[in-house]
Amino acid sequence: VIPNGVDTARFRPNPHARVKVRGEMMVCDEDFVIGAVGRLHPIKGHAHLIQALSLLPDRVRLWLVGEGEVQLELEALASSLGITDRVRFLGHRDDVPDILPGLDALCQPSINEGMSNTILEAMASGLPVVATAVGGNVELVINGETGLLVEPERPKALARAFDHLLLHRGQAAQLAEGGRRTVLQRY
Image 1 (cartoon, rainbow, N blue to C red):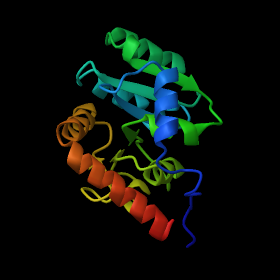
Image 2 (image 1 turned 30 degrees about the vertical axis):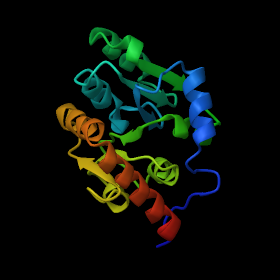
Image 3 (image 1 turned 90 degrees about the horizontal axis):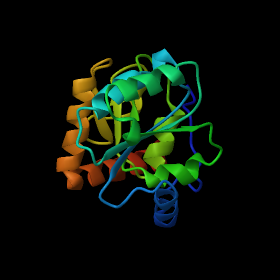
Image 4 (image 1 turned 45 degrees about the vertical axis):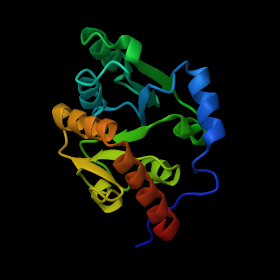
């Protein structure tokens, strides 16, 4: 088996890109930004992530990169939960390597997933990853070493994982370092 790989020169920690993209998106240093990259489809579990966001402090934001058939439903869900101002739908982007450094964590909330390039790119970019324990996610995210794994379709479990990252910034940094190291060594 030949696993997916990622260009670690293109996807890397980049403090300058972080400052630039956060400025463009008008988020401050105190904001904690979760990102998800992928098509907006029911199998990707974005609805569970939006529900999780509603359980987190107001300073937690969500950027969804991608397009798809459930965008209007996701926008309606955010509105019904009163968190429209905390969710940004960024659409299709060709500058994902420049967007990722602006995040504080990446989430892959899929109900089913193969080997996710998005997780590899986030790990290469030095981000802690919260992912559902499905498919190829469990090959990439080693719980407590390169990220945190939760059961799929469990918004409260996602919220608990992000609460943990918010409260334990040192461990979040260790997860990010472990993820980058793993990508450099294996992917």
